[in-house]
Image 1: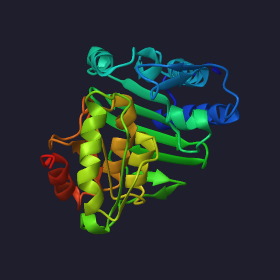
Image 2: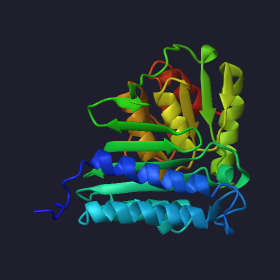
Image 3: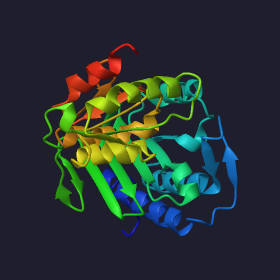
Image 4: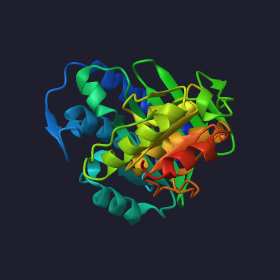
Length: 278
């Protein structure tokens, strides 16, 4: 009678437990990591904390849902081709957990408190659950498909800005420096004069959560992977915003050049991103 029934726990409860346990462990390692390695460049880092966080999350998920599939950043070779192939191998799974164990590793390494644990669950390619946990601020953002998005137990909604000129937006600086970074920098140069200001915190997942919470009106970046975006994309959608590719395609797990907004500035920002460089 006391034997646990596999799969009896809710997906959300397991995701929250994974994120909080991993976040607590990551926070305890702040300033105390042992190994630091470069992946595809000096701007793309990994520590034993990233790998340990992913191992912890994976083991907890598999303990509860042993038949589910798992895609984690640290189990994939660096580079866009490898991440695209890794997603292709599992994207149609019945249930697929998509995990970034530390989104913002460079921030973590330098003690800059803007990093997060990102956990999403997709069913046959559609994200149905997203959790983004910021251990530094002890903020847990969560969304379930069709049920809204929440932080601190309070429902989130996107900002009300209707024009770029009154909007605070964010971007990132891609680790891939041959194509992605020059494209993103060209876009930055075009957008900066058009908006109230731009921020770059260094965690795509947390930027997306901030769009959902109304703290940012938009976010874009070039060359991201599924684990950077999946959880945050659902947060934005469930908070009333809009997210997809910069080319106008609706969000799907394969989107790499992401654009997320409150919906009200989406077309304006998309047009500026697509404009040819001067």
